[in-house]
Image (cartoon, rainbow, N blue to C red):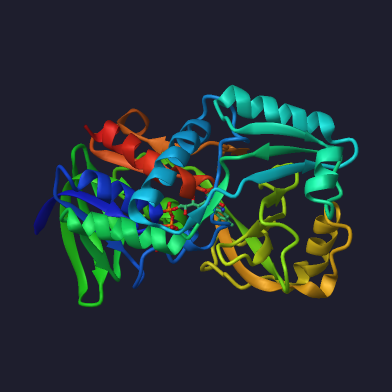
Length: 368
Ligand SMILES: Cc1cc2nc3c(=O)[nH]c(=O)nc-3n(C[C@H](O)[C@H](O)[C@H](O)COP(=O)(O)OP(=O)(O)OC[C@H]3O[C@@H](n4cnc5c(N)ncnc54)[C@H](O)[C@@H]3O)c2cc1C
């Protein structure tokens, strides 16, 4: 049986960022079940570089989002990855001003900067199409070409000696402290692989993999549910070049407007609970059209419904322990599962794209 230092399961943005980081000091193999990197969460998102507005101060999401934001802009500049620090407005309708102010204070307490509360008059002047009584401007929010990011991370990881094994699925792990034996399914049939360090960065696939693993404590496995996020694109000219967000909802950031690097606007994602036992279904639920129009008209009353058409969808892994939602990233280490050498990256939904480089630095610090 072949033995390597480190195996990473999953070649999304997180697995690749971790591989790039660790490959400088050890032999790394990345197992990816698909033919290409980033076929799931990492290419089915809003491509927004978040600026740390929403998360409880001190949480992993707040800290890693802010650190990741800085790292990501620097990485984009160094590697010429298409991006834009276009800025974002979180808009309040009548009666929502207090909630907007609370968001502003939350962001400040988290350490975010580049923030400004804009009154109605400024908005009427700068974004006259918007129906809003006030807005929070975040100057360090932006957009990125997520495919170019994935490509660059993969290239860096490979240049540092990482072996990226596509069409290789981690099926089963036999866990003992500091020693992990994997059964890997490949086009040439199954084989076994052994490693001292194992990093699970399998996105939607992490919890199912834990259920197929021997030696991982059952109490540390959260329940996973799936929340699809549908997107609709806008025909014709975008009314703005900034990102426009309503105030956040319980399980998402609200149906927002993002403008891609070609200037094309799209709206989403909404939150649609789907069956976790079905294979990921990325078809847009077209029945959501009316609900989209209603949500968007709260801040853009003159939107013409016929300008929206189904675009794409992504799926968020939502975690629960005893019916209670896990709201933060969940990075499980030896302290959680008594298995030195194993790092388990769970619930890496938004802002995981922004935070990926910071998550990778955190994993390196934990692995020593
Ligand atoms: C709708 C939506 C909108 C979002 N918007 C934003 C945003 O604007 N900004 C932001 O910062 N973040 C956003 N996010 C979050 C961001 O997309 C994710 O946090 C990030 O992409 C997670 O990356 P990942 O590498 O963990 O997961 P993935 O990209 O899903 O990678 C996991 C990989 O593991 C592979 N895999 C799974 N099981 C196995 C197995 N057993 N063996 C081998 N390989 C396996 C999968 O094929 C996959 O390629 C959004 C997410 C969603 C769903």
